[in-house]
Amino acid sequence: MRKSLDPCQRAAWLPLIALVALSSVAVRAQQMGAPVPLETPPPPAAPRSVSIPKSDETTLKNGLRIVVIEHHDVPLVSAQLLVKNGGEIDPTRLSGLADMTAALLTKGTKTRSAPEIAQQMEALGGEIESEAGWDASRASISVMSPRIEPALVILADIARNPVFQDEEIERLRQQYLDSLSVTLRQPGSLASLVAGRVVFGDTAYGHPLNGTPESLARIKRADIVGLHSQFYRPDNAVLVIGGDIKAADAFKLAERIFGEWVKPTTPLSARRMVGKIINPAEKPRVVVVDMPDAGQAAVVLARAGISRTDPDYFRGIVTNAVLTGYSGRLNQEIRIKRGLSYGASSRLDTRRDAGPFVASAQTRNTSGAEVASLLVGELGRLSLEQVAAAELVPRKAVLTGGFARALETTEGLVGQIASLSLYGLSLGEINNFISNVQAVTPDDIQKFASGRISVKNANIIIVGSAKDFLEPLRKQFPNVEVIPVADLDLNSASLRKNAAAAMNR
Image (cartoon, rainbow, N blue to C red; front, top):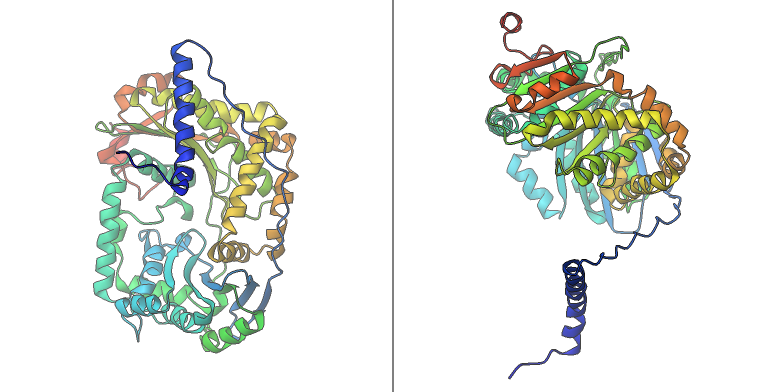
């Protein structure tokens, strides 16, 4: 005898039953040749302004800037100690040094071993992590608000007193090398690294942030200790504390825990330009890395973009939003319309100096040249004709929606404030983000696309089986450089292990 479902069980099954019924109707309609009705998604709701409480800040006598953002909705506190230098300070032959240094902060101090750091944070019910990016190195914690003081003590300890044990250095080096061995076999990841060298050459932003097999092998403990000693100092750092804590209490904690951090007597080195001066007359490169066993070709369009403090920042991110995302132009043209890729996207990476603008897609080797042409074409089309309002409204909504999601967590809020602090921007800009996005016009987008990310100065990089796309590619771009993957050198702008021999090839 079949058992009947109780009311609660029936309610739980109703959505699935309805979905199956709708699917069956659609299938029968298709079989009968009738058109299947498609519902147009509703338009985005009108944008709503963000109202984040005003940040409070002070500077300790040792030069450490303290920023506090109160947010009492949940009993959590996050803190981020931000050192205002990252991968851009790596010495020429030691790419990956800043990243390794930051990663090693949690691997042992003068009074705590790596397991003890992990166990103590776990006992507090919190999290701790450290990493380096471009322009900054970070160590952060997140705990329940009553436990913020002991967590901050651990944060201060890892930033000030790391011991950089040889055992931990070698373990981390091997992890990096293992990860790189995978990265260098993946066309998409490799194309991204090549693009950095093509766009920025031998300038600081050109090298791989996580290093190369050659550079990682050269890094010694003395290099790590030296970088930490030079750049991890209170007058080169910002401590951002956010969440369920009063500003006055946060300032007292910071003074007590970080106030004894000694400021070195030597002045900070003057910041140098780490990007590349954009030369409109410079001829773009078309680089093919021949990877005969690649299952797909990774196609990248790359050029220098803008800095985070550029007056065109909001015009830039809205322009990029038109191009990227599932409903963005690149994905619509390359994936949805032509079925040439599982996804195409772009990013405008803004840094202290002009970072890269990159558009990319992976495709069959045989369609590598076609996808390169489509990337160029879509960027060119954006500069030649204005975006219609019907397209622009939802693209702005995606951008503001992503911003709102970034503020949903305490860590996200602290991260946003820390980023503004890093680049010397007004902390109040966080409340103006949505209005600044909404103020961008179709004319602004067309001007930005034609000027700041003009396709005329864009480089093309393809990693894949060259024999499948090289001939059609050369019909579009006569200046194609072909580099066998075995000859590729990510340590220099030439991208060749033996540039002289390659010239005579």
